Image (cartoon, rainbow, N blue to C red):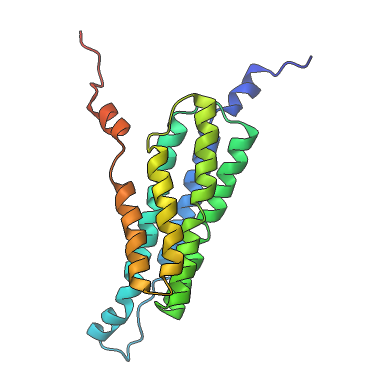
Length: 205
C-alpha cells in the first residue's frame, strides 16, 4: 500500500481549482470588453451610439451571464473540502463552455441581431448549463450539501435557454428577453446565502 504524504494530500483542496477558475473567467471578461470599439469619425456621435447600442446591450448581457457563473461557482466551491478527478474535469468543461461566450458576443457584433446570430448566442449561453449541472451534482455527492442555488432554478434556466434557440427564428428580441429572464433569476441571491449573511460573524460573549 502506498501512502500519500500529508503535504501532497493537502494539494487536493479546491483552492487551486478556484484560483484557476477565477483567472480564466477574468480573461473571458477582458476579451469581451476588447471587442467594443469606438466608431469611425465619419459617423456623428448620436448615430454612433445608436449603432453601437445593441452590441453594448449584448455585451452587458454576456458580462452578467459570465458574472453569474463566477458568483455561483464561488458558492458551489465553498461547500467543497476536497476535489476529485471528475470535479476537476467537469470544472474544465465549464470553463471551456464559458470561453465561447466572447465568440458568440463578437458574432452578434459583426453580423448584427438576426435570427441565426441570436440562436447561436442562445446556444452558447445554454452550453455552460450542462457542465454546470454535472459539476453541481458531483460536488453535492462529495460534500453531502445541496447547492445554494437549488436544482429547480438550474432546470428552469436550461429550459429557458433551450427554448430561446428556436424562438430566435421567430423573434430575436423575445429570445434575448428569455435569456434576460434567466439572468434575473440568478441575480436574486439564494435563500441559503441570505440566511448565512444574516448570521452574526462573532459569537456572543
